[in-house]
Image 1: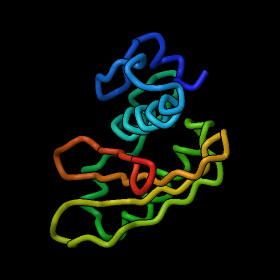
Image 2 (image 1 turned 90 degrees about the horizontal axis):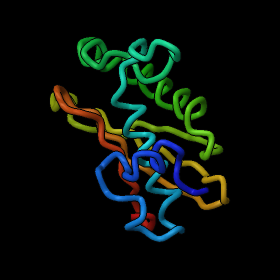
Image 3 (image 1 turned 180 degrees about the vertical axis):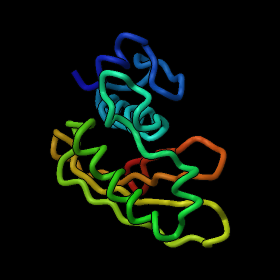
Image 4 (image 1 turned 180 degrees about the horizontal axis):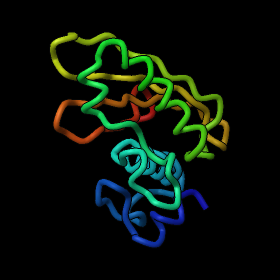
Length: 139
């Protein structure tokens, strides 16, 4: 199965797109993107049975920026390694942005369970949800 059980049960990816509207080959990538969007938009401690699911409170990250940006980078990597088993060899690096923009962007490089290499841009903005999207030839 290329889509997660959550995607199959709901019938849609996190962006609302029906699972059946994409080819089998695209389902794995879109399902991973959906899972990462859900993971990164959940605040750590809000899921009772998984207290480490999600990321730290972004208000703290922005308040303590730029020092906390590296802590967020580590949290992103650890969250992916823990809660997205379809990705291997995860690397996360921060992309430089204007320090006054209240925006943090990370590039995630990894290998899908089928061996395909993928790259995602993950953007965190003040007062908005995190957005994960594939970049490069994987769009």
